[in-house]
Amino acid sequence: MRILHILDHSLPLHSGYTFRTLSILKEQWALGWETFHLTGPKQGNCGLLEECVDGWHFYRTPPAIGLMSKLPVLNQTAVIDRLTHRLNEVAEIVKPDILHAHSPVLNALPALRAGRRLGIPVVYEIRAFWEDAAVDHGTSSEWGIRYRLTRGLESYALRHVDAVTTICEGLRNDILGRGIAPEKVTVIPNAVNIENFSVNASPDLQLAKDLGLDGKLLLGFIGSFYAYEGLSILLRALPEMLLSNPDIRILLVGGGPQEQELKALAMQLGLEDKIIFAGRVPHDQVQRYYDLINVLVYPRLRMRLTDLVTPLKPLEAMAQGRLVVASDVGGHLELIEDGKTGVLFEAGVPHALAAKVLNLLARPDLWPGLRDAARNFVETQRTWRGSVARYQNVYGPLIRKGIPE
Image 1 (cartoon, rainbow, N blue to C red):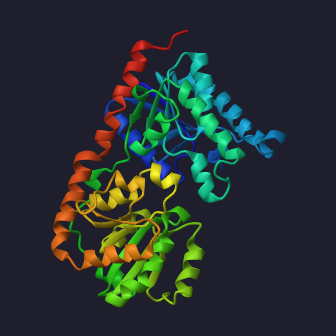
Image 2: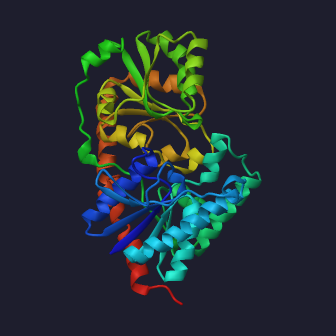
């Protein structure tokens, strides 16, 4: 089986998007399938038509140029046209059995054009609805003209592709709400390589000392600092927690658009010595920081994006048997069972977060059960091997029946 994946971006860029892509590709090769990989014009900074990165071969699409590429709305048309042309070229070279387009719709529309022209089935994978992400990033207003246009294009693509995959039940339910037949939509959930995560690792005492955290009780977050992550809720909950336990500290590892606002908030609260911003750390050093943290906190705010989409970071913490506290947004509810695999609190409410954390810290007798259940959930329901195996039931029927003229 030969699958041509059409991607927004890939290595050498690092993001949750690229990590999911790599996990899918590795498991598909393990199943004996051949994968080919094409990125669209938004990959950027790429003057090559083909490139090998970390042993993976990528076909690239030159960026759109000319007047159309500089005008609002028309620039998206230029991206679609350029990718369509490149996709037709690459498909003629690799002769795939399946075109597998991944979000956003700017990849799905070229796949539809090429698929119909060449008689190749098209699978569209929704990882998030990018109109919702644009709202959070401030580049679009909810239900504004751009939002509705993007949503309309997504719905058009969903109706016309041959099969749809998505990463969680929240997104699947939204897709079904657009009138898409249930049998057309398959959930391929985010997962982890469980063998990469160990439990009961010892903390690096020297690192703790270097960070000024020796002997402290650490609440932590490791990831990107986007507004929807709700990290300000965690910071605002800290004063109440300190009243009960003055040894509590917050360790934030990573960076992003909200970094300066969070640092300003820490100063405003007079807690700059209680909140440690470790910055971005090399990927091979991240585990050292995980091993320092007593409780991982994921305080996502409630909005369409967070209610529909399941995040990956809590799964990584659960795979290590970590204590996890998270807001009760829809995306977390698919991963965490309150009181069994973790602890949930009312989204957006600092007092609720503080109360749940303090209660958890006061009940060390509950910790082993929470840790074991979290690890077991990942082992049994969220491994990449199990997730990627589901593609067989998506690809297989399409190849067998072919596409009618």
